[in-house]
Image (cartoon, rainbow, N blue to C red; front, side, top):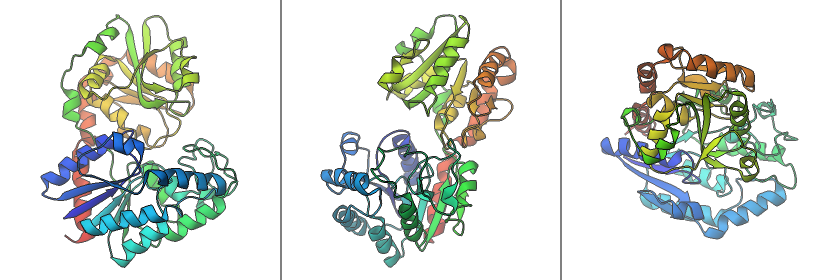
Length: 402
């Protein structure tokens, strides 16, 4: 069978997700193509079986129309026609949406095409923007207007530059109208946390499944040595955090607070890009740049004693699974589905925003390694192995009857 993945950008965790899914699909004898818009990131970070659609000007036009009107998902007419032309040429049996609300698509045009050709759609939600009038996460501000209709958005948008006007009421209605009329639609969420919210949204009458994110756990369990990780051989307990981009939502200020309040026996290390203003304040952190070399990242994980994820907004972060697969226990806030990968033998989850509890958990865990052993962590990580992608293949065949 032929499968199309529709995604806005090759960034963050997605390239690794796509690579693992592609291997699983091809092992099953099926074909897969990734359709991404014509942007600088997607041209620089090309992946196998990638199909570029639209023009380089499209995103800029769509973005500025969003800035002026507060509306998304209705612009990009000509670029969406180009996407449809290329999808038609490939003739897929199923389309898997990922992040599509990102200033590049005319959703009504695409939905009409999909329904007219009876193409099943699997939609993987990586955040909540498909059920809201704008925002990607709402739990930090405690806003639940999306259940009946968004308006006066309190987040001022937490993933894109704010628009000049708040048109979330109309955008919510547009999304409800067009998303819910997709004739053969199955929703996939990586966490139970998100699935619960989707069941309360305008998607409640559609099938909603949970398929956790998965990684190659065996790869992270193999012992790695790397020159970069040798700087962590300082005799201190290493408290590690990893993110593609560190900001307040990811908890960089909390990591700095930990570095300030933990004793001299500890070293707090963060890996990833840090916003410039926040980096100047990171006086108690050892900041390492992001790396695309997987063996290097694994070596850094394996040098750590504890992994801390103080994220304030998240779905089902794969960094937690990577840490477990590397044999180190995880401490996280009870944010989104962040704690769903943990059990009592591999980590601790504390209430979101409770820094004191986070600090106490770090100290406790570092003195009770026997209860959170490397073996326990690796064994738990196997629940989130590449077998998760087999579930996607099974779903593709189920919805397409192939």
